[in-house]
Length: 152
Image 1 (cartoon, rainbow, N blue to C red):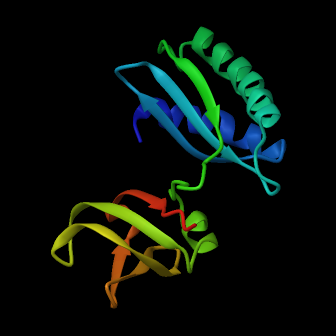
Image 2 (image 1 turned 180 degrees about the horizontal axis):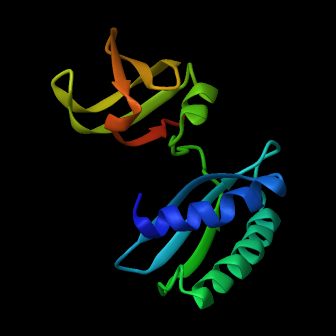
């Protein structure tokens, strides 16, 4: 995450949690200036939820931009995580143990950067993924991106 996305996460995550939402991921697409928030809740996310979150978050971020903390031009988008949900925190990985996962690492791990397989386990410090019958342990600090692989 960047300093900007970290600041956004810090500014809105507790507010969203109090409203029953889980902030899954904050992305900032630099070239198009889009600030994208992926949110979830126990019952899933509807279009009305996205609109509600957009209003809640927009007010907070606008107030902080005035104070100088988040002075970046952006267009806010709020979305559900979707079927190919990003996995970003230990609790996400723990929730989806047993699911097919695709991830890339920041540096080579077990001789490679890309992994696709079943998520075998998740602790507070690392995951284990089965790739072609071989179990590979990867520390969270080495994971660059991770997503669920939708199965139909």
